[in-house]
Amino acid sequence: MIRWIAFTVLGLAATAFAQPVIHVSAAISLREALEKTAVEFKSAEGCEIKFNFGASGVLAAQVEQGAEVDIFIGASHRHVDQLIQKGTVEKESKTVIARNELVLVTPAASTQIASFQDLAADTTGKVAIGEPRTVPAGEYAMQTFDGLTLSTAVAPKLIFGATVRQVLDYVVRGEVDAGVVYRTDAIVAGAAVRVAAVADESWHTPIEYPSVIVGSSQSKELSRKYITFLQSEAGQEILCKRGFATTRPTTHPATQPSTQATSPEPSTATPTTAPVTVPVSESPAP
Image (cartoon, rainbow, N blue to C red; front, side, top):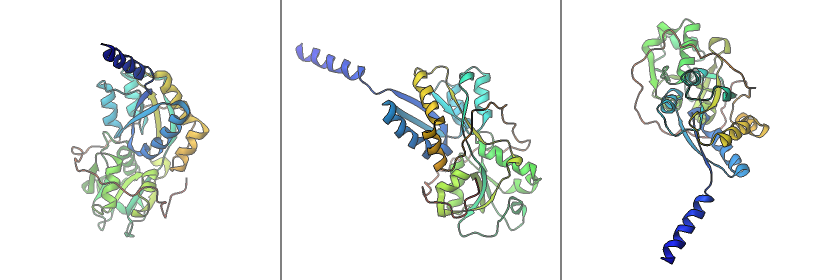
């Protein structure tokens, strides 16, 4: 009896002093940066952060279906705004934490492609982009093709990745002639890819990462603290070191999908892990 009481007391004590946890679902392009911010935030707040990284559209669907998520950070306004419209997340908590650029990458040894326009050439084979319905990078890519009047010529060449990192993997492995990813993804791949071109910002809607607190969250105060940390000088420095551009909080309408952003079902191929932290030899200007 005494032993049972002792175990019960110890169990209650462990529960009382359990480390608080917040669950963050975020666009996979943020992975390396957010993992670093989690280390700093834990040191300051004594809070553990559990991440779920993936395609923004897939993560948004999980949030809508009731997954255990405190904060959702997408790579576009569209998926966040859809959750706001459905009342799943707190509208007033929407905050942009970073910006990015769209780049065209090729395998490191390839030199035949020097611009987005080169994708229409007969000499260019397969081109990888993210699945436009769920991967914002793919949607931005389609907007760029539309704006440059390349969609008809490029459409037969397109291979669709389930995430922007899968697109990057296709390029790293040389399975495609080119891929459209974010500047930060190219930095992660390092010397394994060559940045052939940077998309002009006028070719697509702004690439911003809005964060929002989920309405069912049981850790809203800690969630607000983490978002505030991401906006702080320390948080922004971490993001900048990994290639993101900082931005002040803004509110934008949902991203308009490309009129030609249709594709077959996303590929289920298992991506490999690309090299990490090696600088890009031809990094685009910020």
